[in-house]
Length: 153
Image (cartoon, rainbow, N blue to C red; front, side):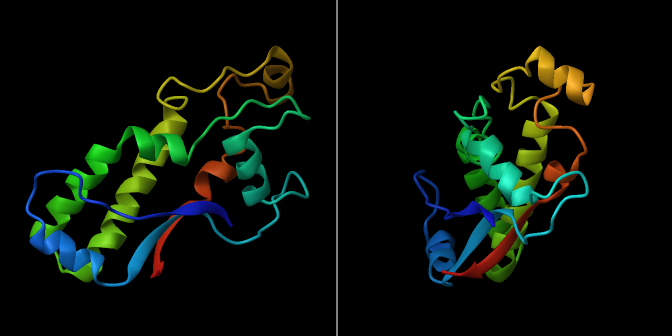
């Protein structure tokens, strides 16, 4: 798996009572690429490719294009607001699942907007190989592999 745990923290002035209940359920959200399925176009897995794209590779001269950490960091306030919105309208056990799906949507927007305009452009040689100037999008397999799940802490 390439990914990380995301734990909601309330750094706002909003009501803490339900948020504290959410913290007590001993669950967390994992966001990333799960499973080791090998791709059809290479012997690497989506997790292997995702790790290189997320952190970059000096030896392969690939710049880091964070598609997991950066979108979440840029959208922390929206994610916290979503958690509070869900706390008002759903059972606490469903909040993390819904917030995980919301974060997946944010990550998909990063793919659609070239990392909200922050990803380095593809080199001319990469554009020539894949026939597209869109960073991180070639076959679509990496993008489709992004998922969230709620797990025990």
